[in-house]
Amino acid sequence: MTTSPGSVTLPAMTDGDANLMELAQICALTPALVGMWSEAATVMFFKFHQVPPPRTPVALAWNDGRCSLHVHWTQPDLQTLESHANEKDATEAAAYAVAIAAANHQGYVVRRRAHQGSGADLLMVRRGEPDNDFVKLEVSGIARGGSLETRVSQKAEQVAGGNLSRPGVALVVHFEAAEIVARGP
Image (cartoon, rainbow, N blue to C red):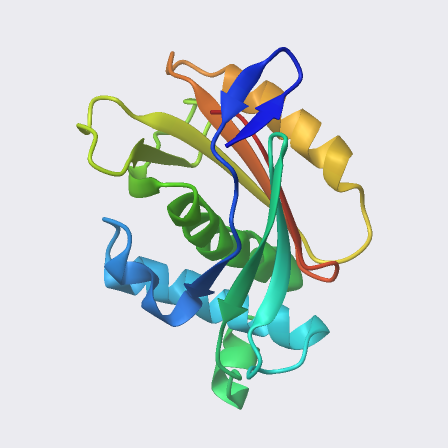
């Protein structure tokens, strides 16, 4: 356990492993949807990082906690690279895959997509909790450049709004820097 400002005790964050090729086993979304997102993630990691092994270390900052998520992915073939050639779309889809892995590492299970106007992309619950006790998850990705802190602040505002009144997490993945920043429960 660690103590944060204001004497709130938080569980210590430990390093962990994430296999982007097995995301369908850790969330409730369809294997086809999660598979497409995982493919995009392999393309984005391939642009900036050495193909595993070893796993790609990604710095995870969730509120005041810090750890490293060691991400396993496979080298994309030519068809996969060409299928995800639009970097803007690939970045967005890849960010969903990495967000599922990061949320899982923090004890959440992504259960479904959120509806338009909710202020979020996905809905998740703490592992073992009922589905009606969900938390919103707003996800964004940055391929290269840009400011993680600026983007996560924008996404925190978005997840706090919307027509779905639930607590939320804003999570941003920076692929070139291999960093994830999340703010929220």
